[in-house]
Image (cartoon, rainbow, N blue to C red):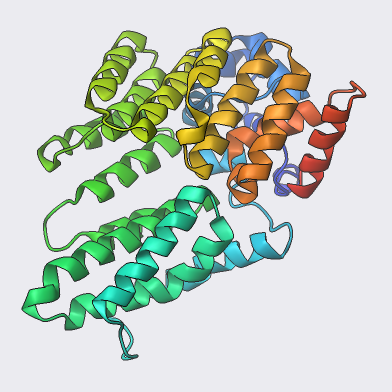
Length: 375
């Protein structure tokens, strides 16, 4: 148990992998056989020579070891700095909110003010501003619950819509923090009656992907067809298909998403999806090409940061360490906490920080690793 306790500080995935493999009594070759991964890759992970930059192998490793994904990624991570600590504290407040069946008796907000605050929270989420989103969520969820409980018939539909949106924002933050059980509970609370709003279904698909359950994610995505799903579900489904190795299905879904996209932002999101799918299939050169082709200027901060992380992983796989480091530094400038809470990004940061190349970019990544608690 002491060996596992040593992995609790949020370090590389490979450290936890080695500890859990020994605890399960598995030889390295046995684990490789169970996962379908190359024994050399698994050995490299444990020795710190390799890193996890694809969801499929991470899901395979956790399944073979009978673990939750968080057992290997180390989520939720120990707070680093005041903003991270404030974001982590939100999980406590939301846990209390989930445990209470009824809203507090405090006064509510006019629907117009609730809508304005919800828009501001959504903008913080899109920008990757985890701190701003976290500060707004506890009161916003309370007010949205109150609005649904007290709304007249004429305002019922709007109050329910806002409550769903706020709960989905909260679930997304909890998912990224690593509180995936709380995220699921909050999404369950978000359903008005027996209906399944599209926003809830989309976030559930994201959650199942992060849990390493692509087949469940695909099943959930199918349930969204009746809800008027547009371009977003095909992109997420393509990622889930790529996790299972079904590239042809993934490409078909991306083609569907491109046909459904109607704006520069949506087309850029599909382009980012193409990069993510190529990366998941291990085609680093293609992933880098798609990342460069995507219209980064059309993306929100959070999505731009994610695309830069995909690009960094692709460059690193091609032994372009400086280019990879530059992408990570830029991603950190765009959305710092969003990057540092991402387990795939963290493993890449740790891997690049351990390289001995003495360049300005390498020094910047080492500084980033320090701020993320990886050194």
